[in-house]
Length: 352
Ligand code: TLP
Image 1 (cartoon, rainbow, N blue to C red):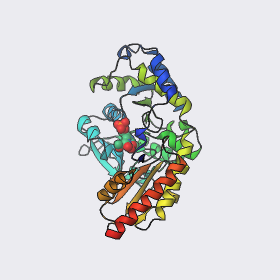
Image 2: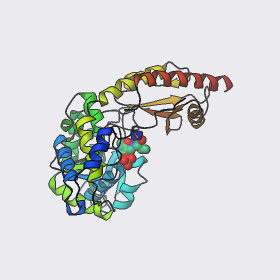
Image 3: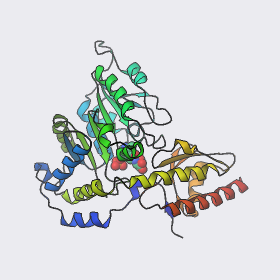
Image 4: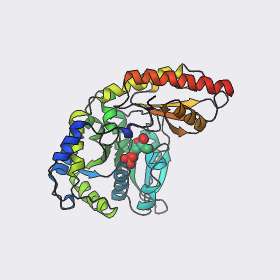
């Protein structure tokens, strides 16, 4: 019985077309800015996101780190949502390495942070007792908030408040194309107003490696130096960028297949006694659901039991589990996964 792997969209493999493009890629030394395939990817990404320039990085974590390093100095403050990936899942890098501290504001159930909360959090630049707010970080789609999306309007409202306070806005857009597809708007509508945006090639877009950080020419010039400092200056990485170019051409529209699959998963999970999720809250490819400890048991034991029954899921928090749909999960797999989960949960509930 083949396992159905719903842990993350990061598990997707490159397509045959990507592998062919990688084998044939023209390359050069990118530390000299001479890799034509990387340059093409960066230009293409920046254009799609309405920004002037792009920079290939090793990962979303590296892009977010470089953005923090570029905008913040020691003693500054960055504002972000209390559920931000940058806060929870990046080993503390953005604050530890920039020397800036973090100020958390609430995320709503969709992962949005409100302009009013950001307004209340930014510091008075004339007061020498307080840190300077130099950066506000957004996340779209929102990983820990069930893949929730921020609209162009939501984004603009926060950007206006941040800019009025003299802070830049970084968008962790690891899955920005999922947001664009869900909202049926060009990705640039979601990214044009921010000062920089990072998106991941290696998640649902199916590339083996890489993220692209995009922003103004000036931002990217400064970011390039930070990338070098953190050891991210690569050489003939056009072999990786070639997959990215194919991804931007062929992998964006198909994300629309993953979203109904996620919603269907959520609807099925909602029908299983002991699990809780609101299917109407699922807009992209991430489903986070609650496990009733009394009825079913500890979330980590549930993960282990599901694995034995051929469904791989990840842990989100305490009693919440996460499933992510992606290119290797068909609608038949969704039905099969639901039937396996149903059997596992019934078994666990019977012995609880
Ligand atoms: N998310 C991963 C990891 O947490 C394991 C996942 O499976 O969802 N921003 C966001 C919103 C992300 O979801 C992730 C990765 C990153 C940044 C970091 O990207 P990578 O893994 O490329 O460093």
